[in-house]
Amino acid sequence: MATLIGRQITQRIQARLLHRTADSAPGDGYFDDFYHQLMTSSWPMLLVGVVAAFIVANGLFALGYLIAGGIDNARHGSFADAFFFSVQTMATIGYGKMVPATVVANLLASSEAVTGLLTFAMVTGLVFSKFSRPTARVRFTRNAVIAVRDGVPSLMFRMANVRANQIVEAQIHVVFARQESTLEGEEVRRFYDLELTRLRNAIFNYSWTAIHPINLNSPLYGATAESLSASGAQIVVSLTGLDDTFSQTVYARYYYDAEDIIWGARLAEISKRTPDGEFMLDFTHYDEVVRAALPPPEIARLE
Image 1 (spheres, rainbow, N blue to C red):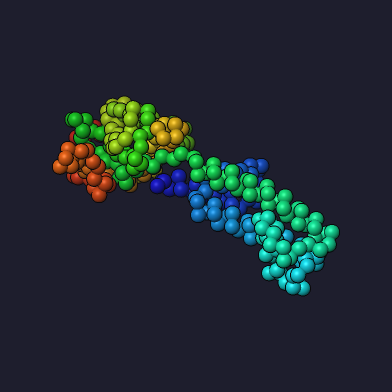
Image 2: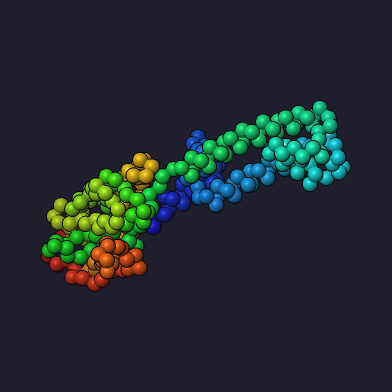
């Protein structure tokens, strides 16, 4: 989830990538970083793209065979025969019923064989890289909360590792962003690093509640739900750590808008003990909040 400004930036980037204009600068087009686009796309989108490219490539070669007219045992003018002959050639199936009969058709078949060989090699590498890339499966609570914790007004949210492994040496970085005005009246977007009571976790295996004390040094000191909403405030959480299965760094990120912060609430308890004494997490109440004492009014600044 992003603020209006974050969504507008995302939409502008997507529009720039998908609708490149003549006056676009180099590097603005979707295909200028095509490998990255494929690596970051979802599995369904990647598979749809591969299938579409396969169909288009065979369709183009089929048109070439129809123009050359050099396929024995194919029906005259049949695009279907030419297409399936192209599929057999590209996939090196070679049933032998339809064969190229002219020099031009043989040249096309040779070109298609090389194209298929290179294409399958690239797709295999892409699929393997995407499949083997480690990703963190960290679940963040839907809302952040602000309430008194150990006598101190605090911003809190929770993370949980939903994989049956450990994220070693996990650490989080929390940034608070909002619109502000300079002394000259210029509107700027400013970012503040939020101090946490605990920013590292040697073994992130279960649940982790991040706590930011709202003291005199906090950019949230004196803020209200209305002021955060008016300034387009947003909290960005980044988590990094080492996956103990792949021994590679994994990342996770989440955004909290001003509307996602609940004042005067705490996160519901999810840790439980089974009858045999084992520790477990009850994810059925993971996103639930419980009403709690609001921060004392004296933390508000006098305007």
